[in-house]
Image (cartoon, rainbow, N blue to C red; front, side, top):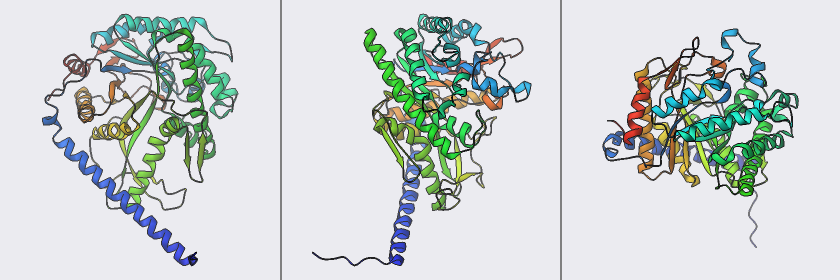
Length: 473
């Protein structure tokens, strides 16, 4: 047996540096190659898609969430949080959807929508631990039946950021018991509502929730702790797995047709601040893997690991029947170095800003939706565009936004991507969390003083596409 000479510390350092340099080079080349492919596909899209028609069973819809539209959700963490911010930034009666859902559903029907995503308010259904409000469940059942009577498929989200105050007192998602609490609520909701629901979304944007609530402290509970953030991610992943099992179990026991269960995962295009910097490209690539893919991979594989930082092993793998993608914009990233705390980089403003901006300063970049549909197709699961929208006071810009992003969807579908539907965010103007009521996302305008609704012209343009099944060039 030949004995290999042991490398010196110097040789080892050189070897590591060379390997790392090669990795950065590969990342840079792959990134450049992918960008070139997307640019070419986009340039010929208008010609390529002239004969494209969306499938007859394609889900055309829009979405909202309970706290953003219902009004007077006084028993959750967000309502409590709002008591410490200016009065005009509080949700209050929001859009009064709790009392006006029938009117809004009729408007959705008028626009030809075939799907509507909304969320259940956990704090209404379970106002105290283990105590369920049957009147709240009856109300949500009435909503579901109203949608079904209008030919609109209900897509039900079980948790869209807010949690009951009693769970806050237990420690929120930091509590080891939180996954079991969530599963208990999900079982009750499924038993009461499941007979008329085919699509369930367990969690909305787990990465966004964790970042806003536990990394930068912008949302309740206002924490700024990386350690706590990773613990919350683990709780949310376990909560999904348990909820998935409960939903499937209830349907099997009741003899109902098997449902489809997924999550709504926000995805962000991370671009290097400098296209010439391999370090920026590396930071952007690592952010993409960690923020866009890690949670989904954990649910598919039953485990996930970031060496030296984070690891999780879940009770079960394969707990996604479809993937919901919430896509809005692109962010630019600058590397801060190669230390663990720096390698993910920080947001930056490029020297030559590209693309139009929304009222929240987000870049409009429809090519990013095409990129993500193609990237997530590798998981071999149906893809639902569960959110995609723009806040703007220029309704022409909203029309263009919808058309351009549907072009991205159509282009990916023509190339074989398994997209089952597109849900614009949002059906009506709504309370936009920390930004209050100023951002206007809705297909339908809401006068917050009178609660009057008015269909925007962009909604009519969307309707034309829905009814024809074709894009307008």
